[in-house]
Amino acid sequence: MLDHPTAVWLPLAALALVLALLALGRLVGLRLAIWQIMLVGALVVLAGGSISPAAAWAAIDWEVIGFLFGVFVLGQALVASGWLYAVSARLLGRVASADGLVLAVLFASGLASAALMNDTLAVIGTPLVLRLAAAHGLPAMLLLLALAFGVTIGSTMSPIGNPQNLIIALQGGMERPFVDFFVYLGLPTLVNLVLAWGVLRVAFWRHFHGRALVHAPEDLRDPELARLARIGLGLLLAAVALRIALAIAAPSLAFPLTAIALAAALPLLASRYLWVLIKGIDWHTLVFFAALFVLMQSVWDTGVIPSLVPEGRLDLPTVLAGSVIGSQLISNVPLVALGLPLLAGTETTLLLALAAGATVAGNLTLIGAASNLIIAQSADRHGAHLGFWTFFAVGAPLTLINVLVYWGWLRLAA
Image (tube, rainbow, N blue to C red):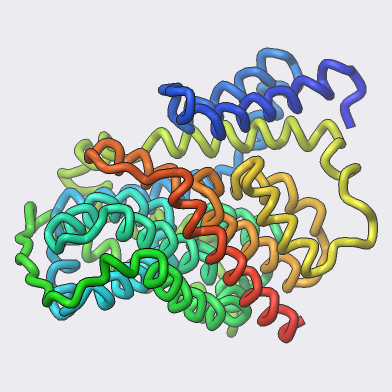
């Protein structure tokens, strides 16, 4: 614990400032982006001496940053080449109804986010679902919510599905992260995706029309880049499969998760498209996470967070409920960064309860997950709007259902 009063309270004040700006910035017309807000918090604790530059550098989890960099390179190539849209058009061409389209968006975004990370799917999926909504006479809000809920729920079952899961897999002491996430969270995640469709079906019942959908084909924008992107995607999936196999058969040979993403990005980084891809990477998100690690380390060093947790009360319901509620206050990634040390040495089910709770917390409010904010900001740029209160009205009952499903399953598995 830090002894100097300023060193103790300045990080907490900086965190409070960040939370206030995240929660109220959109309401008061503040034009600061989420990465700028988090960077302000990190700069405050650095300038105030609450954390030294050397400690700040050490606090940044460069394995997480490296993984995100590799995934963003691949995601940028999939979008810029037109491959993602062309494949989506072919797959969705078989969907004949609004019911089927919403279900397809939920499962396609959910399963893809388990391999490509939900923030990546939030970036590349928003213009796609807006195009689908306009083409088929559906409310943009319906498909934006399907995308948001899909990437949130689907990402729960994978250690590389979202940043908070990645942090738990890398820093939680899990020896078999892929196996544990899939075994403990796979089936309830698939169940929750179906239940999300049911909630959307009830909330938007007027808009589930019976007209047959007519799909327009999509052509590749750059066939050569699309070929390289397919190679990268194949390498990513192959590396994930190898990592899972090694975790089961030879844990000592398992390679870092960062190697998976960097291997997938290597063919693209070694191509003539290097500069185009580098310019298109979401550098702001990388800055966000670097600043996040610095601010959260400073807050943790105060010793205040551990003192707030009663001893002997870290059971399954407490971890699930606490992660859902806490994620609304400080968003899910900061919550995990702060809460993970409290679970050091505990059983795997509690680590996965933290992952599940902090992830589906993103379905409760718009500020509960970074992927929601990415979708909202992207929708604004495309002339659509993901409303805070509409999101809450649909997401609140869905979150309760999601938590109950995970609680029931983890309770049986414990």
